[in-house]
Length: 405
Image (cartoon, rainbow, N blue to C red; front, side):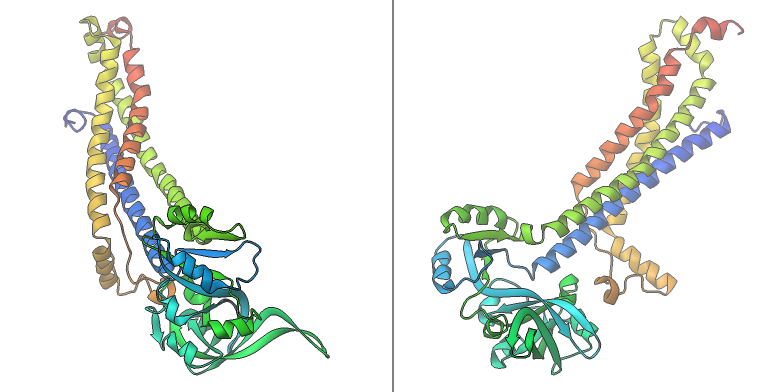
């Protein structure tokens, strides 16, 4: 480090060394910070969406209706891994309000049992799920869906169901007017497409008789639910299948994970550019020290020793940049909310409008395995960048260099 920034050294070479180190600081810090923000977004998404989604489902394998669901529920409740069960009927529908039409998912639930398997009751901002039982043909809408339809509590919406009704005048899709009894909000995508009715209303709308589409299941732990439900499946009759939340919502979280990987690879290119700037610094160092290398070789220094000197020189520059970048990235990731708030106060603007982004501040979750991964990747790239200049230094022939000294 003393040689890299010595005043006796070529000033341009010192600038190149400084730029390569600062580039490493910027690349490592930005990579750590962005990965922490991606983790925060994934955590927010997981917490909000999965608060509305049951841990799993038990359904007929032929996608028909489950007639004697009460007996099945009694059998499953005896299993130690099952904490709660609730029947449901669900299908895609078209909702029409004064403003426009919108596709939605209409789910019929038992309000009393639903509280045990999902958090929709706790997400109510107007009315309650109990209002669905009190008034037949009433509906609870997500706040964003209600806003698009142009309705609120007490208004009516027209629901069109993918079931055909045969009349003397022809075949028509089934439709019914529903009264909006309440609104829920979880600040995530289901706010824009999910609607709920009571089980009795759903059975009449979907012509299910006394049957249901299946049972919603809640286990002791969300993260272990896939394994626990997989263990439950062999004990069920063959005409029943078990699905867990990783199957119903897995594509969304796989997409989030892939996005994190792609963003990480793109930002790693910044680290790669900074690492290969070390090549320029080392090439200039080798050119400056040709005479010194020749003298060392005539004194008995081995080629491997010369190569080790320049590898250590390059890794020293890289380590200084990586260490500073790691410290800066960890501090920034740990205080990103405060930094964002300060920027908003300075600029006089709201960077994250909750109505648009479902968040009011940047979430961040710093995972130390991500930090270690960034450090390891930066060190590997830096080592790769030092090998060629160090190899060229080791190949310098002392006789050719000292011939004109």
